Image (cartoon, rainbow, N blue to C red; front, top):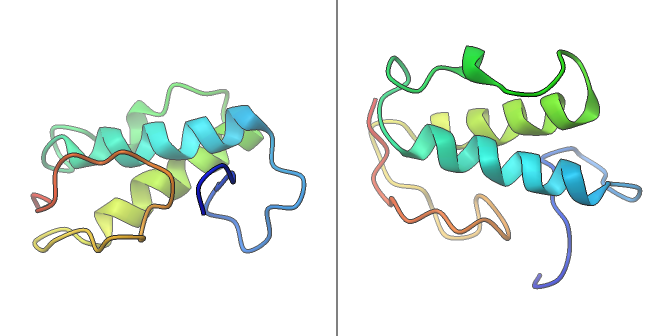
Length: 87
């Protein structure tokens, strides 16, 4: 999947580069610690914008693994360095 964009959406035929980047930013942000310390409300993008939706999707994707490990490929094309996600 190298070189492809991913936004967390069911279809991403017209995904912008910024949306793919925002997805990875949200995923990486959540992987840094607990959901309390790194809350979803810290989304830096304009509310309901495509980038915001992608950031939240990335955050939620990693949050779903809280208390466990992020499975390889769960967050495509994102360099998540933390494997075990804090609840």
